[in-house]
Image (tube, helix red, strand yellow):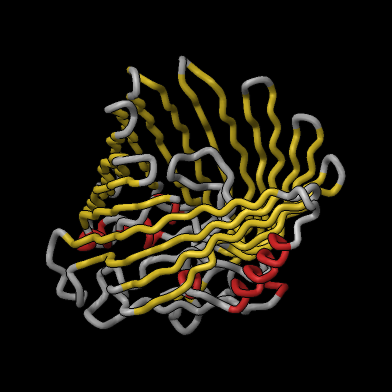
Length: 395
């Protein structure tokens, strides 16, 4: 299991520093808030998988404590998850967030520590957002918020009227959390797991991401740049070991009202680097467009189309559909999200329903249904098709 899902020394250091900052706010009038939740999660496979020891993809009890302190010049945020994982037979602490945000003058904001970063326009599609994702959480049945994984980063924002300049530095490269055959089957023989060569953990191997965002009336425009590595081990070195190739990428996006809804368009071009004796993915262009509109009271429809086009070779088109219906005074939420590729004929369906039993208690049930050829992105996960249930108490 990736160390991103476990406690590590860097996470502890950031958490301690953020707690110290929270306990020593910049003003005696600082506001301190404590929130959190406790929940039980379970998810079971809907078909047999001889390669896996358990019929479950998720069995855990989770409690989250969120501490926020707001002062005149700085804020501190800490989010800790305490997890009992019955599937792995372990108890662990996950540091989701532990950062301090400082305001430097009227136009500069600096955030440092363990944080969850996101930008871009897509709905569960990511082009210029190369910050880490947890795809194990996404496929086993955890809440959607756990798709975004934390990184230990420094983020600088400069504000100039309607324009914002953002720069993120992640000193130690942070990959996605991806299926390896340990919790989710990926078509490997029984007992085998995917191993990849991790990049060196030194400052010169870190990541840089930049964005220039501007609002012009009701239109949001942005340009992006990134230098780091591919988020998953898509290269093969001279010994046949998967590794994370270097990546340069640039892109842009637009988001604006259109036809009574919201339209967005995003594109990117990425170039990979590798030694002559290494195999790396081809340079490729990526683009998607999306549209969302409320079609009737409390009923919203969203669609997207994405095209990934390598410089040479076959492109891949992917379609998505989101349906959301609110009922019973918006205490019931019926949702559906679907991915489908007409090129590879694979897909992933995510039906769900949640009910707010009270202001504090939410019941959720849903499924992850994957299919396709074993060589396709969703097809290799087909045997992990599962149904899940969750009860959460928030405070």
